[in-house]
Length: 573
Image 1 (cartoon, one colour):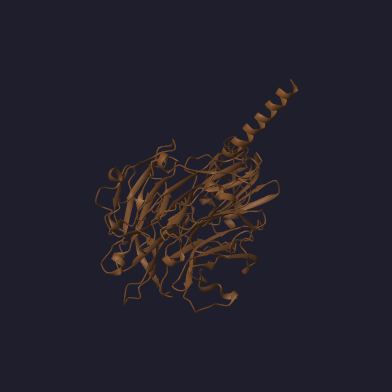
Image 2 (cartoon, rainbow, N blue to C red; image 1 turned 90 degrees about the vertical axis):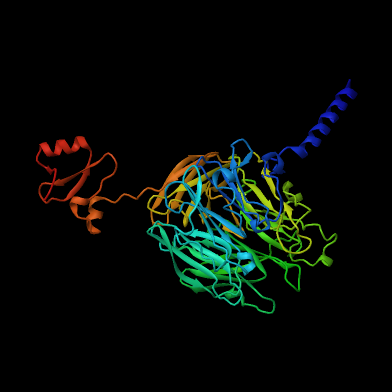
């Protein structure tokens, strides 16, 4: 009998040990599973990143992949069916021939503040050898219409890389930055177009850089100002002193000057509420591998470079980076897409094998370890890794990763597979936030959100999700560990308004609509408002004191009582 009990115990232990490899861990780790085929996102060919938005405003993230359409690979607009699968609705929503061009980066944004997201797509103009007008897909609710010429967004002289929606003059209307390469013999490069009266005007050309491929938007210094950060990939033989790596070159414009820089992410990696910078570097003509840059902001506008990880090789050849709390343990991890793109064939064996991607787990203090087996987000061995984008496509509170592998021009990069990695999650809790601007632009680009749980405050920026060749889904994600109640949420809107919320339940997608901060009648008058134009809170009405005609806001019942007593007037001249 004792022998049988011992044998049963051993069998149960072995059974639990074996299946533990297939069950997501609950101690802070997570696992990814590739679901590309199951989701209906299978594709092989050239790629040019991925962009996530919401084409029908149903709360389920949808996907646009342009696939470098010049090569005849076709552009796909995938509708999220809400059940883990997607349907290509490009022909129905856009048309069969509209997107036949040398298509590059795309970005979703609610240009006209009408509640649905429009799309801008830049074109490469046949490597600068032909005219290639940009495309602007106006969302009319049930169909997209190409309207670039109507809004003066064609700009056929640029070799487009990536557009960035933002509000340059903070008037509540989205402006757009075109990150371009110059044509041969033409210095016309990146341009800033400002929106006014439903059209866009070129405000100025940004021709400081010979070639430019990547930029992002960030309130880098938490000072209420948002900045354009251009990633200046400086050529071999040129160097900058460390205090000029992050360099101001114009009002609200900075250049991040790093050799062979490919992609940039701005985030608070060590929970000190100062935003840090992580830059990945790729290969060049002389060296296939370079050290990535992790620059921690130690005090206002001061950055110190630190080692990324002691558990991995210092040098990589990566082209894309995304940052998010993959295991919902209240710190930000990073995922790097590495690539054979640009690496000489003699330096890779076999030459058609893609390089391994890297997932860095944050240890809670801004230092990182390489996650074992990338927590299941494995590299496609075929093709050339190009870019990654972040999304919680199934709305389960855990960030998923989409990777495109059809980058490059080399003979080993004839195309690659797209990959969707579903985050299988763990027992940690989360909250996701959709911001809706009313005074600010409707996408709330330029906002900051602070979430405080158990004495720890995290920060996220609404910057539109733009980075190298890609757009992450704009919904803001916070992991909150084992906490079930969020103590405080603070939203700092571009308009200057601040909204605060307390004791919010976790494990939900929270929609926050910008609310004007109420000012008392006295404050309104002191700021120049005429007494008769003073506004009151909801369910309050305006009256005036009989003795001095000063305004006051009271309830309807109080108004009648004060009028009966002769203490208040209903109107003043």
